[in-house]
Image (cartoon, rainbow, N blue to C red):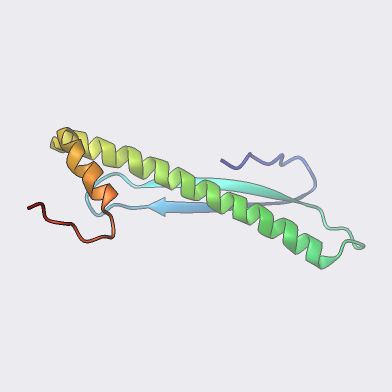
Length: 107
């Protein structure tokens, strides 16, 4: 997860946020990651400032993706337990193993 920036430093703080709303009735959730860029000085090349910004943005997006994936995985496991599919874990493992491939029929 991206570390929280020190907002007392001079410069700019930016944030990336995502809101997920489920069609199956689960409560929506929001995740956020912030990043900080240093204050621009007149002598600093613009390309260095852009690079710093894009590096921070990339880390924040990856952090948001990780948070969304963790929450969705947790909710999926919860839903599986509620519907009794947890006992069918072998079938899930087989589906995962054959993902994207045609299933071979046993003779």
